[in-house]
Structure formats: structure tokens, C-alpha cells
Amino acid sequence: MKRGQLFKRLMAITEDELILFLDFVDDISKALLKLDIAARTRHIIDAVQLEDMWQQLDEESKTFNLHIAMRLSPKTLWGCLESDVELNCLEWRLVLPKYADISDELKPTRTLDYLAMAKQLNVVDIERYDVKKTCAYLEKVYDFTVHKKEQRRPFNFSIE
Image (cartoon, rainbow, N blue to C red):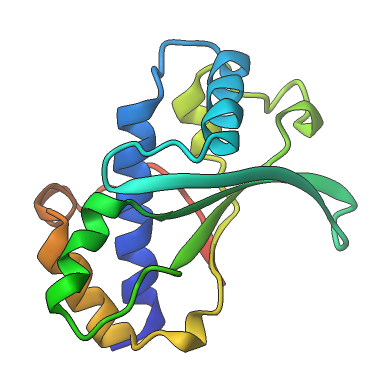
């Protein structure tokens, strides 16, 4: 099984959890404030726990990106007790362009449109994980039915 399968599952979980957590009719500044506070307090949404949020300069583009770090929530990790897969340290990061750095003609007005500008999803220390076992575990503890049926992908991103 290829790494892309793991990225697809983590992205589906990320999409679902952020949609659940954020009110997409709110303006983007309110959504970013809500995310920032949640990340600072390591807020648990449902299947994920927000870990951190920060800005970082992209050396190639010389612009800042917003990184949102996530891990599986205790509820989701509960299944590890009877599994040979250790996912307690599994961390991934959604990378977005810094909102203030987006040109006015491209600047989205809705939170969902901003999240759709996601640049990439990074899995920290991905080589530590057996992709096949990790994907099987995620299939066991998370319902991907909607994603399989609709083949939806509201966030466009690259994987690393």
C-alpha cells in the first residue's frame, strides 16, 4: 500500500473534523481565532485533537504559511489497546497560505473557500509507520463511507 492512501484518509478525517468544528458562515478571521485558541488548548473535536498552530516562512516562495498540527483524539486511539499499531504519536499538519498574504483578488471570503486553498498535508515521521497497518486501523475506527461514495475532495493539496 502506498503512502498516498494514508494521506487520503488523514485528509478525509481533517476535512470532516474542521467542518464539524468551524462554522463556515463565520468570517475567516473568526474561524482563525477559533482555531488558534483550540490549538493552544489542544482542543479535542471528535476524532482528532488540535495540537498547535503557527506561521512559518516558505523559503521557496518567500511567503508565510499557516500550519495546523493534529493528532488522533483519545477516543480514536482507544482502539489501539487491542491492536499492534501504535498511533499515539501520529501527527499530521495541514498547510495553508497565510490569509493576510493572499492577494486581494484571490482572497476568499468564506472559511470553506480558504481551507480549500490548502497547499499540502505533511505527516511527521511517516517512515515510522507501517502504512498498510495504519490505514487498516483508521478504517476500523473511522467511518469513511461518505468519502468513498462521493469521491469528494473540497481541499486541494499536495502530499509530503
